[in-house]
Amino acid sequence: SRDRLARVALEETIRIAPGFDDRYDETQLRLILRDFDRHIEQLARALETGEDAYVVSYGEWLVPIYRRRKIPMLDFIAMLAGLRDACAAVLSPEENEAARALFDRWSERLKRHGRLPGDHKGNPVIRFFFKGAGIGDDKWI
Image (cartoon, rainbow, N blue to C red; front, side, top):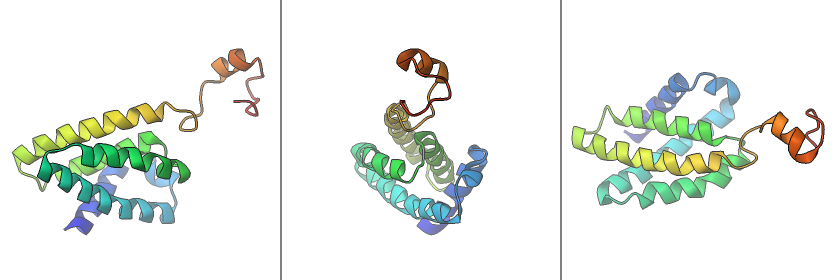
C-alpha cells in the first residue's frame, strides 16, 4: 500500500502548504510522488529498528538533490508533514507516537539547511548594508 500512502501524503502536503501544486509542474510533482515511496521505506526501517539515523541521515543526503531540483527545505518539511499525517491513519497509536518523534527529529535537522543561502531570497535591507550595493542589485549577493 506504499503507492496509495504516497498519493495520500502528496494530497496532504498540498492541503498543508497552500500553493505547493502551483509552484511545481506535473513532472516535478511526479518526482515528488516517486520520492515519497523511498521516504516511506526509510521511515519503515527507522520504525522497525528504532534508530532515527535511517531518516535523519537520509534527509541529510536528500538536501543537495532537492536543492538541484529547486525545492526549498520549507517545502520538503511540508512534504514530511503531509507524510506524517498520511501515516497517522495506518499506524497504531504506539507506532504513531514513535513516528511523530522521528518526523520531529527529521524536520529539525532540515530546518538548519533552510537557513543556508540559496534556499531563500534573503533580506534586501541587510544585503544593502552588508555589501553596500543597491537593494535591487542581486549580482553580488
